[in-house]
Length: 302
Image (cartoon, rainbow, N blue to C red):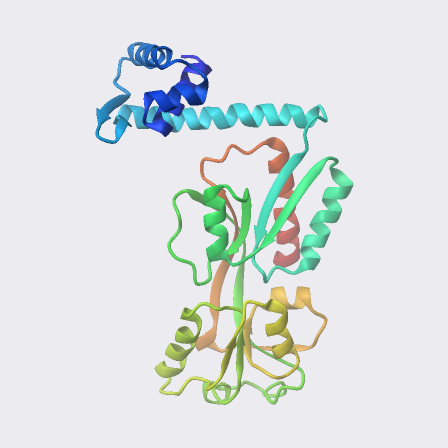
């Protein structure tokens, strides 16, 4: 089995049509047919069957297709790594992070990359975990730093490496009437305006369920926003009550905050680094992403 045979095989699997696949790899249709037939003879299995939709992979063909994609990715990774080492190509790292990750951590990451590595191109995207996961699946970004909070079930195509556990508490800023309170009850919390760094419709529903379970009406006003800055201005300025992580808030702001551990509103979450399960990670990518993981763990695991 040769690499070019696998390339022709993948082209036919993708196109499902001998004519289009032959055009894609620069062969005549006859030459492609002969190459696929030889591959099937060498392996002793049928790789394609004809159907109304074209040439469709058999079970054996599907398994070979998965291996062929992995081999192709390995070859491309090796080529890229050698080009980077020779200075003919830059290493590109695309990383998505949740909005709650303080910019100070990202600034330290960029500073260390600048000091340790030359010729690295970095793309940073801030978005919600629910949006970052599909970006990883599609290959729009290589890695994502996400929280499992309000996340759906794990995606099989995406692997997660847990970095640290976190807990969310009720928080108010200096100047809020509850700032000096010893331990506010749910009844007291229901009297004030809330701010949430989320536009997810599940968030107010979650809040309503908590208060309903205690036979209380939920807060009359909940301001939802996708702006961390706005939400923390409302909370830090003493205008609103919120739910936030002491680890993340204290790392991002010098303002005075008061956190309350209210059992009914306490939330556990895990922050992870995720990437495609079948991703062939180049050594340079692994080094850079290990650096990011090291910084985050040092910042939030103490």
